[in-house]
Image (cartoon, rainbow, N blue to C red; front, side, top):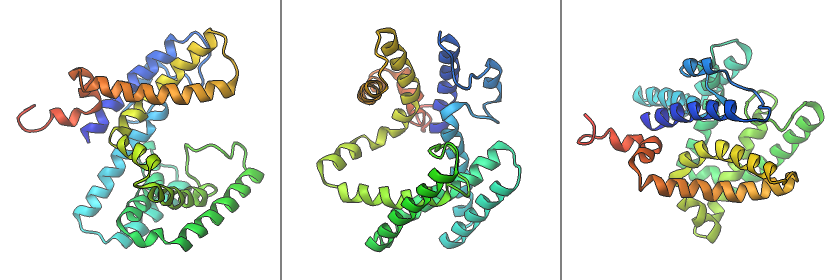
Length: 255
């Protein structure tokens, strides 16, 4: 769990520093006091690490009690419903909300039967219908940082679709390329947001205001920038500790 805790803490501090050092207006500006409440209320995009930590804890406990997979699936579905209907503290609300998606992904990886063509085709239909309903009836339907009754079916369907796509790309050039960088996905995740913000500010300062150009250049530069930072982490121990702290808490390294 320390592998999530250290980057969560470091990049929360970095995120707030970058917000307050920016000369332009910042969406959802976090006060310095928010750093004191990191244990209770995550900052910005780092909510993902916060929730993932507690999901790991919950699933670990369930597995420790040897709760069957099907029972766990029912329990996580019930917790999702409870989180939608009942006001809960952030840690419980977000963990209960997202645990079902994590566990469905786990089951898909474990059971190859879930990759059958009819399941994928059904998922495509569900995704199209769900997105259409969202587009016609929901304001800001494209928001992806929350899971609700309205967005539930499109989110679940997308899990099956994109896992299937990934399996189809295995042992192919594209699949091998992204599989290669899978082990550093956490590093890429924590770096991408501040890196993208800094790069966009630089583009604006040199007069590049076209949003399409910003997106294209941003994706390319930030992607390879994240890979380069991970490369540097293998050369400098302080960086390595931030991204891979579990390496330093093994027996014989830290006691």
